[in-house]
Length: 397
Picture: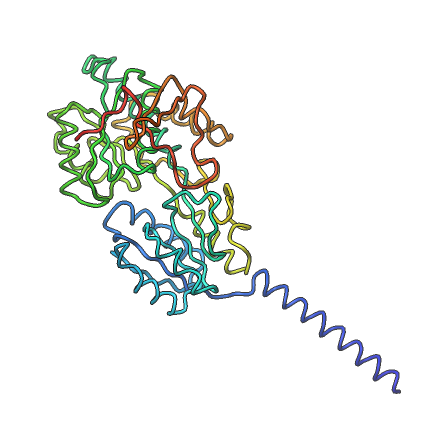
């Protein structure tokens, strides 16, 4: 009889060990059934950039429902971030997402090792040592900028063929916030997309000195239109440039290309198409990783550079939306799709390439030659191309 008790006891111990191992594995791979998630924005959802970023939050709510509790802080300036960041961290957040560029995130992350801090990249992270719980990410915007340039080029080509514009009048305008490499890379890719269709096209750039100012942005766009620019786009945060294009509709032939958010409602007569970064693939994957107690970079699909990740059309991190069939030139969709197909196949070396030279605006002795090409986002999610193309791009004073 004792043998039966001993055997039964041993069997129970084996089963308990098995169940313990199974539950431990479940906990390691998918043990969390609820997360608290923080979002901290530098503006609010009335601006295109923040609105576009907030769509990822909406996707989280749709996917996880009551499994997630989401807390949002808006209109937080970079130098005022510490207090709301600590409130989110000490309020029980498991993972936090930041759309701003403050270096306080990377500085404070080590104080909260159990929280994952995910920030849109704002500097070159290649080779840098960062806290294990600090992550950066960004869609490869140059790809979408180049494709939107194709749409602009197709429209300009149509205007030339119709006789409303001459080749030497092929001028596009760019309303820019600051002369950072992120901004310069974006507008360079845009004008190279334009020139892939109209080789004589040139570009004027007007800096506003702020990321978000309706007055400055609409003023810059109006000046570019006055200077003869026939297509306007932007790397700023308000609808000002779109309004500037729409207000001359009917008196001048000027078109607008959006960035981040559809502008068809505010510029129905002039909007061509919108390019955007889609933040959803990263945000959803990062939350899934934390849910499953796995490293974020083991779940996110993209180019992994340590704890920094980027991707383009091939992973759905950038896309074209808001196609206006009433204003797009014939053949535009096919031309854009052809370039997008090249990107999805992994071809990325054709954008920053051609018989071009560029000059560093801060150091004229530093130049580049694009005959051999340049590959953006090769080692970091933050764009690094920071040269002004000679005889192609003019920066207004």
